[in-house]
Image 1 (spheres, one colour):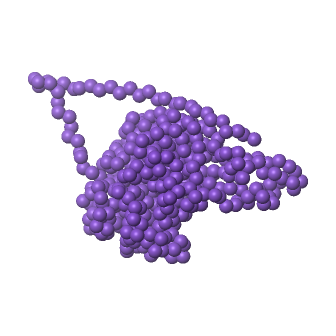
Image 2 (cartoon, rainbow, N blue to C red):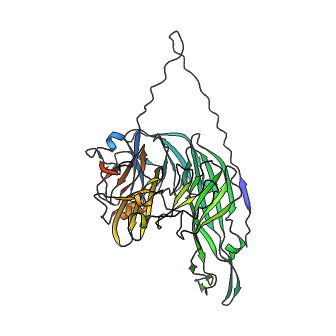
Image 3 (cartoon, rainbow, N blue to C red):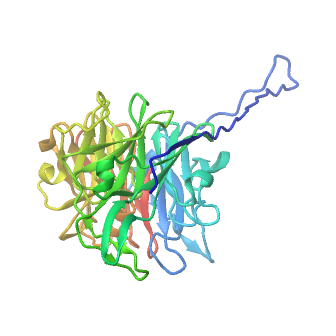
Length: 458
């Protein structure tokens, strides 16, 4: 049985930058630098099917538009236009499957770690321009040595990316001939910290998940970790967990190789992995008693630092909860619980994506268990009764569920949110939301092809 051994490795990449000035032949010194384009672009990303036609599994394309064009319903984005065997608009982001894309707050840069394939784990940075006028900048980093070729990662703070990966060991047990005793189901956790400004790996860590002896004996396991975020002080790192628990009191069945398998039982609450930052030491686990839904998400960021300094965490992509981690204690605030069902008067909602705006206001994309489609809400985390559902033209389209299942990010410029919504294989729009007035309008028209949909705005 493996013990909790904490192993810290540091991969320091020293990057030297040199600068020079070009003197011209005119008296008086140097030439003026090229003018800087200060246009605020909104980048749209969309996924397309693979060769077998599996929706969203072929890769990701990106397209930059101005704020003015984003708000204009007569402006058409045909990012997935396909002619003579190739796409002709935008830029293809490097990834053999749907890219996990992050963006800088000012919209100037996109970041991506390639997911699977021969270059899985490779980090790329792009400077954003209009249309497909993107330029790859900085260093191309290979994180696969620490994170493997299918890492999960997020922009954990402005300028800082953090990649994480979990791999479960075989279940440890004792006994034979039908008399089995469960011992543990541990997992190895890997973490890498990326400097997004200078494109460098600055720290790494490998350790066994820090279950207590009681939790380990009770059958707890983490099969996946995701959505890392730093607290406001950047002293703690919070990582969401797909927590599960084997029912150790149940009678196991035998697989085809004669190995006992225990069924899953209930967990005591939503759990988050916490480490000191930047050292990545002292891993611990905090537990919310307000939910038993997992919080590892899928491809969308579900944790944000609020204006008040607390971390707000959604139990996406199956729960309706938003939980709070206190800035004072770096532990769950058990007195706080936002329930989307109660806030907007629905039943069996599942948060698929959301974005914290400011002052407790957020945008939520959600589905309903017994109703087709995908829906939008403007929520108030401080006064939940002020939350409202927002209506879109496509909300009852059953093909929107596929889109929301892989949705990644909601764009935000000031108080205005930009939400691209296209049912799989169908035309849609950017929905423009004034988060102060609660008004929603249709912006740019978005065209798709079969098996494709828009994933995000940055």
